[in-house]
Amino acid sequence: MRTTAAPTAPLRTIASRRAEIRQPPGRRSRSFVALLALIGVLNAVGLTMILSASSVTAMAETGSPWYQVVRQALWLVAGMIGLVVALRIDYRSWRRWSGHFYVVAVLLLLALFIPGVGRRVNGARRWIGAGPVQIQPSEIAKLALLLAVADLLARRSHKMGDTRITFRPVLVLFAVVAALVMLQPNLGTTILIFAIVVVMLFVAGTPGIYLWLLAGAGVAAALVLTVLAPYRVARMTCFADPWADPLDCGYQPIQSQVALNNGGPTGTGFGQGRAKYGFLPEADTDFIFSVIGEETGFIGGVTVIALFIGIGAIAVKVALHAPDRFGLLVAIGIATWILFQAFVNIGVAVGILPNTGVPLPFVSAGGSSLLITMVASGILLNIARHTP
Image (cartoon, rainbow, N blue to C red; front, side, top):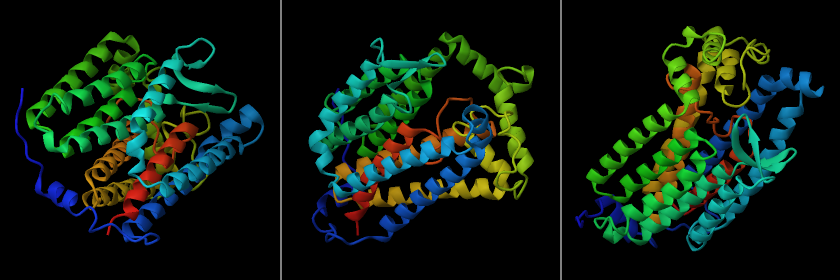
């Protein structure tokens, strides 16, 4: 069915001023500097808190309290290299390779199910690699899907009312990645990429009725997938009342809230928290915000949240001043990625969302997540270099 939807005025203005607002090479906008500073601060917070959160368990398991933080530091170096490389590549160049990148990401997701290639950990098949070097193809797929969707919507921006060549192809791109991610299984990442795609479709000018239908279908699918998996039903039950089973499925959310409560306004002090002494599982990954809240208090937790809000606000500003529609959509997609992932992780830690296993960007321990997020940040910074 054909409908008509004219692009919004800001989008028309951005497209018409493509050449006008491009910056001379080497010039740095305030948005660029602020983004780079916020990313650097969050990475510093991450390394510091990973050292504190993992030192006890690392000492018990490896004999060195530095084991986990050294691994994360090495991944951070790789991430910094990825950021610099992405920063030096004109963001428009990604359009040429977005389709190839998407195919590679899908092939990596398929490789997870090849015997001897994909690694199964805690019942989930999410990693490829051996020893300390392992990657999650779903992290690569996030960026590949984002770039492919941005390219498609940018090329067909003048036909956003024709859903046969805009909305439907985007759904196909999303559905392929989502199906492979759910086979791992990984509902948290599926919800994240769904949010990214919906926001990009909205910003691109997709007719509202289709967005409402897509949102409704997404909620219904999430409910069905939850009901069909007993362990997800148990998670939802424990989320509703963790004290009904405080020694099993309710243990982690209870300990997370206990840690946050122990922190009070100013915290117990760096390294002085008790949650990391075996009380809080995954203290350096999924629940690192709880350790931050315990050791730096309410003030420290709010500061971390403010850093993420700052990145989101600057990324939106960069998007609105991007030289072209592709830059606009990529910047909005990356902003949604970082903000939504941070919201979900922190929401789980404070007890307003059920556990999804989503790490806190730049802060949680996890190599492939940090690496790909840094590459995405490099692309965002490159867009910022081209804004006034």
